[in-house]
Image (cartoon, rainbow, N blue to C red; front, side):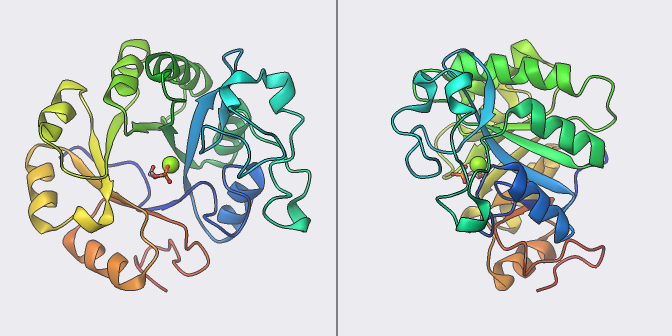
Amino acid sequence: MQPWPYPLWIAHRGAGKLAPENTLAAFRLGAAHGYRAFECDVKLSADGVPFLLHDATLERTSSGTGTAALVDWSGLSRLDAGGWHSRGYAGEPLPTLEAIAAYCIRNGYALNIEIKPTPGAEGETGRVVAAAAARLWAGQALPPLLSSFRPDALQAAREAAPALPRALLLDTLRDGWFDELHTLHCVAAVTNHQIMDAALITRLHAAELRALVYTVNETADAERLAALGIDGLITDAVDRFSPGPSGVRA
Ligand code: G3P
Ligand code: MG
């Protein structure tokens, strides 16, 4: 197998639940806990700016309301994406992908960009996010890993930036999942940790594909998967799992 350049431990949405998800503050907190790789969710503003947000709507994780994709970046940039979490993070802005790219590149951190399209914008989001990522990481030794639950978004990403590595997110092993990985020229599958087992890792590795999982927050799950030879663990528990060279430590 080709060497896998990404760290084993990946902090989910920046720092899991300890800081407001998908903000620069979360990345900084994850980094303070020793993390050198991060996952984040990226979608498009109404005027096509890639930015970090998990939900299609703004209410849960910002001071805004309604569908995020209907708001231009100038409006999104004025929202408070931290006050919902706790008072100390009040005023934390929504970050653009560009801002997070600059932070990761400057610090030598790896990024897993989950393409999280607003429903109906799968192709456009895959295309714009991949093109932006190719431009932002041009000349860098470690490109971002693009992932998505949406094959149509990954297909658009492949057409826009074929050289960037892609991974298919799988909550279940639906009919045709293995063929989708090949059609999309993926380098990895990122599955719900509950469906990852020795047979699945063996099957993926035999096909020269890497096996990653989300979202592993229990020590027993992390130890089981590490013992099986998992290639990546996305976790919220950045305060309990130390991404040191010795592997799983609680
Ligand atoms: O990228 C893996 C994981 O983030 C997928 O689930 O809902 O947290 O984006 P979700
Ligand atoms: Mg995600």
